[in-house]
Image 1 (cartoon, rainbow, N blue to C red):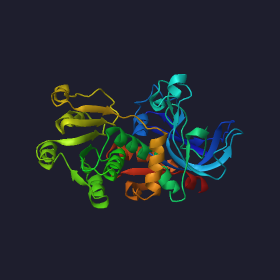
Image 2 (image 1 turned 45 degrees about the horizontal axis):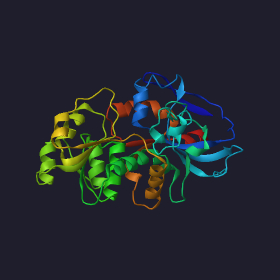
Image 3 (image 1 turned 120 degrees about the vertical axis):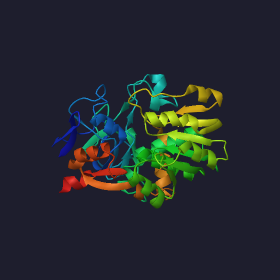
Image 4 (image 1 turned 180 degrees about the vertical axis):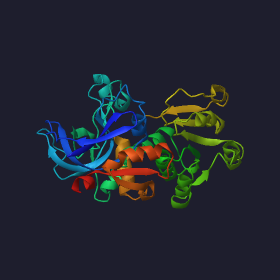
Length: 345
């Protein structure tokens, strides 16, 4: 059995791991695929040192097959194909655990960040983190349910409706998934992106209108597209200081700014523009069980096609090189690690 360990800043070590028998409320899965996330990139660059123990197995965008179940588990069976919703609220105060906002409770843990993750052959986790995959959803697509749930949550919080003009700042994996969910909700979507590879994918494979702000003034483009009023909603997905500055320039009066990106440093934001136009600012963190279920439903019903999102599928031992490529803005959108295939080799 093997696993990918975060060893130290910008260093991944491949090592052995040992399957852990599940306790009464846990399930063991054989990991099939794992997606590389922006949070994994933050870990890789040492930006999560206050939450990550060393060495630690990374990975939280995971699909797999159930191989063992605890005595108290009733809704999951051995052989089930599952996606992992890697949120654990057991350390939260009781009133927060039972609230509608448990996914942002004070003691929330993200598996693969605050605990060992899924970039390993077998992973033992709480049974309540699993969502069964319908037959129509492949294990490869199952590894994208977690980031797709982030997009579903953001679009739901933003109250996106038919014919609205929506701008997505950033055409990375989360930005692209948010664009797909917003378009499914009926919005007219403009994506701002600078990476030529991602621009090509967004335009030619997914059919989005894309603006490269290095070539075109984004504010002027949005104003022209909206007859001078501004867009209905703008999603800031990059965690980039430049995007934080432009996001206040784009919405109409009483428009919305949705913050999905994670900022390593506090950005400069023009609060006067938010005040002047009474722009609503909506933060979105993670997702709840309904968002995760919606993600599965969208893929099962073929309302969203995830194949164009997956640009590389690699063995587990290529995590290091993959993180280095993403850091250098390489030609990639979503990189999946084939964990079960690596194990069979």
